[in-house]
Image (cartoon, rainbow, N blue to C red; front, side, top):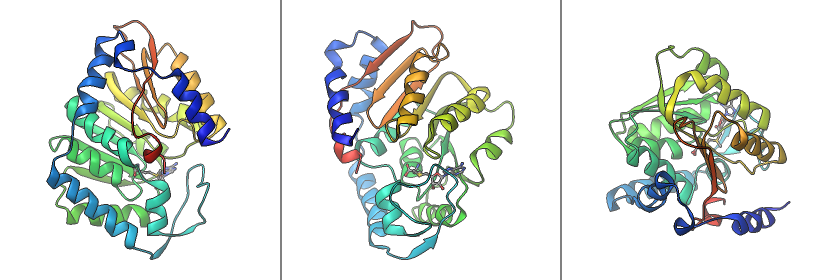
Length: 264
Ligand SMILES: C[S@@+](CC[C@H](N)C(=O)[O-])C[C@H]1O[C@@H](n2cnc3c(N)ncnc32)[C@H](O)[C@@H]1O
């Protein structure tokens, strides 16, 4: 099914704040999603994006994931920006979540050019962010640029996801985990299992590109039925999941504005 078909299906199922009776989710919609970036931050983000948009230098990329539907292994930075970075409401969502839930310790699987990392780091400057990417060339660009912006709360890990996760200290528990690389249903479920030890009952898991492929969407549907996660929210491009074992199991398809702009 094409993107429009998927969107129409989603729209028919989606619910607004008045149709949702969970206080936690009502709060998420009416407070978390309402957080706005200030003008200085908006201008910094615009500047960062503009640097990437105008940079047509090609770099060699090592693709460890499910591959890009559009690119080859030598890619222009401008093309990576266009096809493989968080956009619009979804980049904002990272900022809003880390800010509203006052996350102190967050993990991103898939740095790429660091647009998501920028949003996580700026959402809460007292949050320690760890971001993993196996492609050194891409991650180095993110590292350099975010450093130029004076951002200090990020640790860049150049590694494959599995290896990095297996090397975490047992005690570490992330408040937020953003899985945005290797968009394959089986791999997604494997990462969630590996990350279980490094999460707590209120950890927010953000799963990107749940409609990327049939395999990803099948995995998402399985995850929403899994008893391990009592709260699951479908935001079209992204899915949010929480364990929240103290609440009854709930799944909502949330109506939000700006979806299509956040996809392209
Ligand atoms: C979609 S991009 C990440 C976008 C970024 N999170 C953002 O918000 O702009 C995915 C990244 O994941 C990395 N990646 C994919 N599979 C990986 C794996 N198995 N181990 C490590 N990195 C991987 C790729 O190199 C790529 O840079």
